[in-house]
Length: 331
Ligand code: GTR
Image (cartoon, rainbow, N blue to C red; front, top):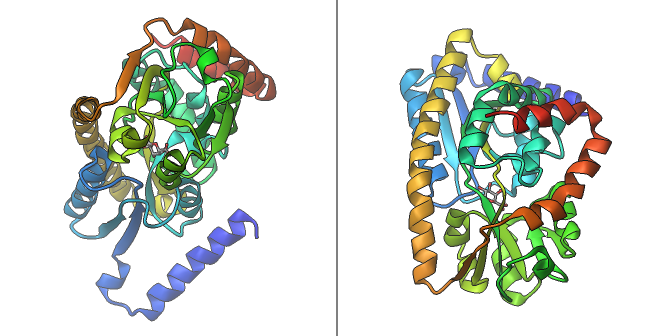
C-alpha cells in the first residue's frame, strides 16, 4: 500500500474510533505515544520525559505523551517508519537512520562534515537546519527540536585504531545507512549494518569485531565490557531530533503547534546540558572499567580515506551540493 493511502487509512481509523468512543471532551484529548531507544537515566530519556511533562502542562492536559523507552516498541528504522505513517506520534531519532529516507537529512552523515559540536549547532540553527527540516517534512516527519549525540568514534575488541589501515579486515557494526557502510569499506573493513539492540551480543560472540559510537552509548550499552579499545576518531557528529508525525502536527491549531514546539525546545535545552555532563561521566566510567583508550590527534588520514564517500554521494545527489557547501561554510 502506498504511504499516503496507509496514512489516510490510519487517520480515518483514529477519527472513527474517536467518534465511537463518545462525545466527551476526554475523547478529543490527544494521547500520543513516543519512542526512545535509550535506557532510564540516559540524557535523552530524562529529556523526553521532561518533554511529556511540559506538553501536558502547557496544553492543560489537551495533549499528553506516553513515552516508551529502551526501544521496547522496536528498532529505530521501524520506529521512524511508524512515526511517518502515524502508528506512533513521536520519536527521538538519530538522523543517521533517517538519512536513507530523506536526502537532505543524510548530509549530516557524511564523515567529518562537522568540525565540532559548535559547528554542528550553528549549522542546524541556521539555514542548513531549515533545509534539513524541510526535507524531513517531505517524508512526514516534523523536527520539533534537536538533541545532541556527541561525536562517534571507533571501538573494537582487537587492537587500538591509530590509522585507517588498522580497520582493514575488521567487521564493524554500523547503523542502517549506506554512507556508513561505504565509510567502513573505504577503510578496508567489512561493514555490518545491525540494530542497536543486537550489538552487545554480536561484539561478545565475535560476530563483529567493533562498532562506533559516542561515550554515553558506549558506556550505557555495556559495549565497553566486550570491546575494550576505544579510539578517538570522532568521524561522525550526528544530531538527533524530536520528531512528530506531520499529519498529527499539522492538524493542531497554530497555538497548540507553538506550545508543542516550545515544550520540545525546552526539553532540548535540558538534554544538551545533561549530555555534556554524561559524556564526561561515561568516559570516566569506562576508563575506570579498564578501557584502553587512544587519541588520534591528527585525523587527516581518516578524512582523506573517507573522501570517496563524499564524492560518491555528491555524484549521486548533485542537488545536495549547495547544502553541503552551506554547512562547510558555516562559521
Ligand atoms: C546512539 C543513538 C541512537 C542509535 C545508536 C546506534 O548514539 O543515540 O539513536 O542511533 O547510537 O548506534 O544505533
